[in-house]
Image: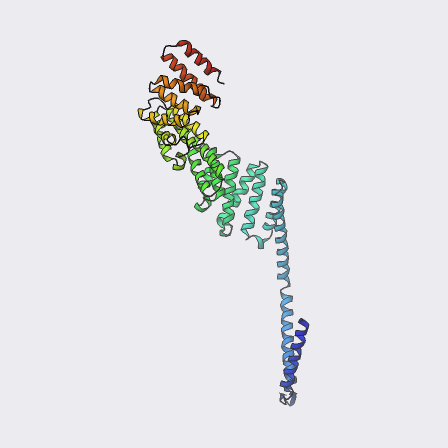
Length: 415
């Protein structure tokens, strides 16, 4: 098809040339001294066009000869560039393949090729990546001095070159990750805090910050970071709930006085305060510090819907309320009675109600509920032990020493 088109064009040119130049009777005369040269105008045009083509060909040939050294330099530079790129790719492949010594040597060879080629010295991003690969390989083989030196070079070069800014961000994140591998939490936190705001809010940076906060025993900061990660969908729903609960427990376990516990409770996210396990843990801490009123206040929203929550949540809330029974007010009696009626066979509810009734001096009702809790094999061992101890204390208050001894013995057997 293409050949046919060329033939058609050729015929068209022939027809146009015949129609144009066939009736052209003009002459072109050239005078030189006493000499005169007459040429037909068609022949003169053909000579002129041919001369132009010849001049263009001569000029191109001269330019090609003059540019030969430059083209040779460009070819050598391109060849060294390809060699350096191949060395860098080999370093990357060896690094991911777990051959860190080979990866380090390949990265250093790529850097050496670039350093020996002045035309490639301006490719700062290539240099930074080479230093980072060498630093990462040195880190994997525990060569920390070489790692720190390569990382310093990468950061210095990236800081001076706007083209390598993304590589600088990666270098800082790698430095924080390596600090965590070295169990150096302060260094990791310092590096992460120095990140730009946009980089610091990336999922990977938040994960590193979470690890650093947990390693540095900063559970409250870790909890805030975990909340950001959950917002960025960095965890599944189940994993997020377990992580937040674990971090909240760590935060609650670090308090030393009631005021600190109250501030921490108010600083928790409303979703955390609605978690029965977290509320139970906070109430247990408050009871241990003598703040029974605060413990009951934090448990009351969960107790009012105790029949609607799961069995594990219900057990945690009930056991926490049993620990906060001291000084319980009369306004709790209707709530306790309603819970016992709604869940008559629940040992945890019986334990909490029995402890609360015993604290109010209603020993008869308390004893039956505590005996129910002590005999509930589905109840946790620690909870059954508390029920036996409460029964022993009731017997001691009634002056029945033998029953108190039997109850203490039964408590001791709960192991």
